[in-house]
Amino acid sequence: MKLIQSFSVDHTRIVPGIFTSRVDHLGDHTVTTYDIRLKRPNREPVIDVAAMHSLEHIIATGLRNNPEWKDEVIYWGPMGCLTGFYLILKGNRTPRELYGLVLGAFKSVADVQEVPGTTPRSCGYYRMHNLDMAKWYAEEFAAYLEANAENSDIFEYPKAERLVTDDGQHFFDS
Image (tube, rainbow, N blue to C red; front, top):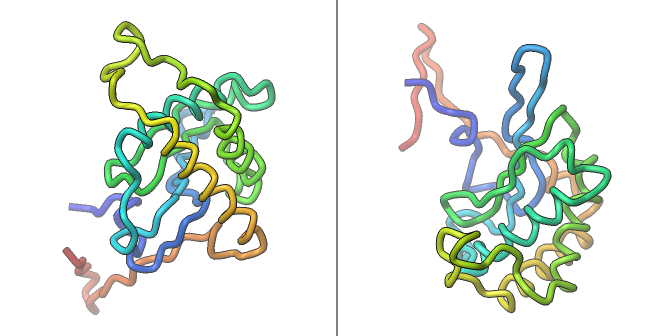
């Protein structure tokens, strides 16, 4: 079975940042999935579930209301591993081109007084939110992005090395 794109990333070397995860060409349209990684996989504690849920609501709402980007946003949601988010946009921009959008989204969390969409009618588990922790994670990530803006490692995935035999057979780590 072919390994999917997100599993070909060397998770032992990835750092927090903004990465292109995959680019899909759907007829006349291009859709790009970005990995917005807040934590070093398998080396840092994952993001608290309630804070992750709050960040999902806050940033998804902000992106979909951003006058410059709202028509480009297809999806914003958490990774199953709780180390970051996926952002899916129409088109294909470089991670560096998204730096201002992502930084602004995380910085805007500081001004939020109430997590949007947290009623029993509007949320699948409305009691599982933590605005204070969401603000803490957002501030931490925004400060990291600002401190590393010139570091290319926050924009380029490290790739896992895969052994290929002379006859073309691929070996994958587990």
